[in-house]
Amino acid sequence: MPDHDSIYKQEALQYHELIACQPNLKEVIEGIRPNGGLDIVDMGAGTGRLTALLAPEAGTIVALDASEAMLHVTANRLREAGLTNWTIQVADHRQLPLPDQSADLIVSGWSISYLTNTDVTDWANNLDKIISEIKRVLRPGGTVIIFETLGTGHESPSAPDFLRPYYAKLVETYGFSHRWIRTDYSFDDVQQAERLARFFFGDELAARVVEQQLVRLPECAGVWWLQL
Ligand SMILES: C[S@@+](CC[C@H](N)C(=O)[O-])C[C@H]1O[C@@H](n2cnc3c(N)ncnc32)[C@H](O)[C@@H]1O
Image 1 (cartoon, rainbow, N blue to C red):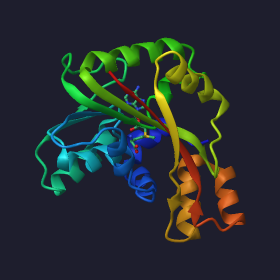
Image 2: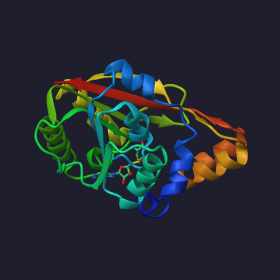
Image 3: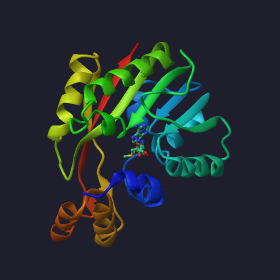
């Protein structure tokens, strides 16, 4: 499996090429919390998949991430779009550099899981800290929406074992609602599919892409949300 930490430090643009092949999630987010003048925080914003989608209609948006390189891509995208209502800041999910009750909507895509999967010794404590931080920063009536993987290469949800306890806690301990969606990759051709699958998911999935000529690579994602 490729080293995601070094990808986020050194290969932000290739990561962005990969996720640019996935569907736009605006309708999913707006189905849960309609945007329009909201103060928004994107935790683990990466190259700005969710930030760039929400910024045009947001009041303000803060993109936070552990990787400065990823945030640079986000900043360039927002600048190119002519937007000025945004800030970026390097931050860890367990300590958000934001005042109490300063956001209406917090989104986080495919990111919290790096601290809350069962391969991390302190995963349950990390999750507790992260949920406390989210609740501290949200205003009363605020909403948090979390996206995480339910399996790349799968046509129906298949949560990896090391993420199941985290997903269960979101619903059973913290009271989140949940649904799942398809987030398939639509590549230009098999060459691009193989290159990007190998880059982020590793040799096994890349081999399957070639064997089955998967220009469209299926993927499922979970969406969890909570309104305060
Ligand atoms: C798979 S990418 C997701 C990026 C973006 N949200 C998206 O949907 O494409 C995961 C991101 O989480 C960030 N990240 C990982 N651990 C983090 C932490 N402890 N605190 C903040 N960001 C973190 C990484 O730097 C990376 O940009």
